[in-house]
Length: 289
Image (cartoon, rainbow, N blue to C red; front, top):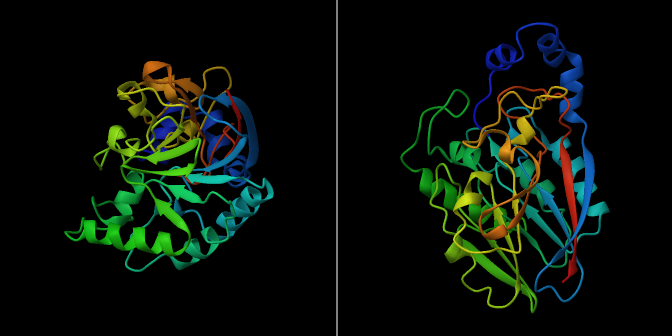
């Protein structure tokens, strides 16, 4: 998610009572309560049912600690998923060493088909690809740092798919692409080995959806946090997308009629509160079609 500041939010809210409500204890409490959302839909090419748990935008570091991640992992495991997917922005702080507490919690995820993820824009800030207030200055060795983190995640049982894919069953292929803002996403390469299998694609940023070069069975996205701060009737005053409210949250459609789900995510970006935008562990039950 793009950087959100207290000042920008209060300006968007008009600086009055709603702003004070969101900036106070109620908004902070909403930031750390989460729910489990459940969805069911068919997936072309699938021959047997599949349960996917999608966790995105953990933002471990600035406002999120190991306790929050532990609760999310417990909730994910309680769903007995076949597959767990991570939607990027796992990290949100300068990394001078491996985030061992985060990796310890993620290593507890249990799914017979594995745990796969992608990188997001805040991950790239954490690598040092760009600088910022809590990332410090940009670093010239950011690419090497990314490689070290990919290996560390793999050792914790999480395979990062950076324009890559894996056949998980005879009827199922999962692909993941690099971050849209700071990487070089390549959907064709990510899904090159799919063949006739049902396809799942993970992209951190939903703004990739209109540019999909081919039809995908289902795409899962994060990044927007649903706006993080929402108001009755009008929704989110700010959504970090060039398409405004179009991809803020929920079920949407990409190029070639591709169905996609944009999760509200779990962590926090810029400011430590949410309003009317509950963090979510997403469960998708997919059926043969």
